[in-house]
Length: 378
Image (tube, rainbow, N blue to C red):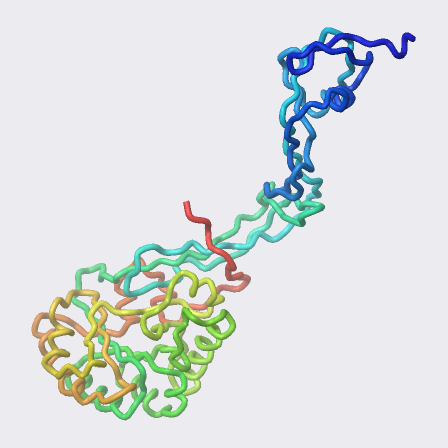
């Protein structure tokens, strides 16, 4: 009889009799209290099993009990017990030392030159690894991770020099040497964003660009719109073009102009660290419209400013209007005190662009790991 005696307790406001030494689980089951159980959650806080956590929470005499106190409770009589919704329970986990993968810190406003301001490097840390989910959560940092940082700017010469960059896309072509002759006559340099496929077919013109003092950079291998490609195809378009340019006699480069000027944060993420700078333009000749030499001259000179990048074309169509316009563009801007420089020279004039990128051939350092995800916004 002594072992089976009952005691009075109040459960969620109702006085009831329970067996002496009853556990809270016993009382909860006997009184059929309706509360919501907690969930079983991963080490990363994701729900693994709804209702798989603690079946209830409990307050006794106004004090909330932790899991150990709930387990140890035995009814003695006259307790005021309040059951509430159960707490979430985190899955069991183990500790492991792992490499910490870098992420990419994206850029916001788009400028004419977008570049790798910091190359990524993995770190190391102690992680809690969930037994059920396999998720890993950093608990202690052992070696700091270094994210990839992408920046985008409109270049401005530090010393106030009046610099401007002429650029020609889609060559080399039958027009290339005639452009080079005009540049040489006027003591000007430019940057030719060449297609890898065209460079391979015209290696002598690639060498002629370099010999004139102008710069050869990439316009990709086959002029595909990079933002529409999967990562493997994108990287092939980039790497194959760089290789084709080098094989055709140009110095190694990791600078490109994306076809249609279309390159964004997602494209950088998919690039795998295969390039160091993406260059678009500030002044568009709109020569592809064949608007006439006068219009091309106006488009390239009206609103010109120091650090501007001018878009013209070498291949891809009839460029007779460009040939007529080019001497007038150069003479008009030289008369205003502008010096025509390559993209590398323009980048080197702005100290916000790292020296390795400004060299035109920045490559990832040893031990780098390109990110597969971006830093979360906010």
